Length: 243
Image 1: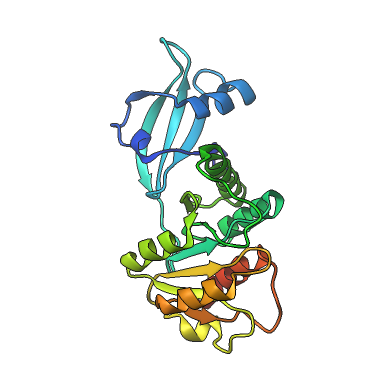
Image 2 (image 1 turned 120 degrees about the horizontal axis):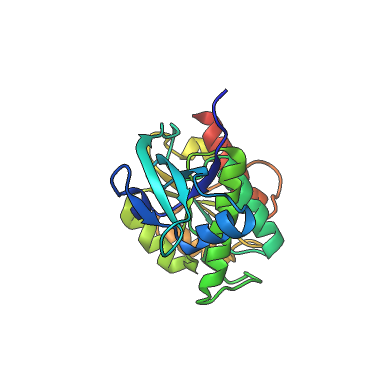
């Protein structure tokens, strides 16, 4: 039976060192490995990054600061299928956490939230909220044994996000209840896609019209009105199941 190691997601820079190198343990990892789990000197953990690399590392207590001795790099097989960006409008914290967890389980590649007119939650420039979201994604990835959590982008305006994603060449679609164009008929499964979904109450008519004017195609996710946290997950599940 293979050894079950505690799994941690780290920045790619940490895994760039040579095999056998002893590197400083990042502070967030110190808190979990030493203060919470209290792992002993020589304990082994697994580190993964967003480039689908994995390394086993040994905890090193000696020296001036807690460190890690890195093992060889192992390249993980990336999940196959379409590259999917979810672009949900910000919603209330409890529902937001649920959305992040399910998006990770279903294999979203990027989560790129927006602030829109009807958002009851606004983050402003508070980096702590983005960091909290990343921690939720990392924990969900550990629970589902995924390769890496989705990349998380800090929220920006709808206009900023459309400009950013249009430049990437991805297909852009927006969920519009009542539209007669089903998602899977509109989206080409061979190209990356970004799916915009609204907050509680949806995008305003003005926002939808502006999006369509920018080349974002309206789609429907079924005959029912979906909650703000359900719509992006329904779209993601449909796209993943098609693959």
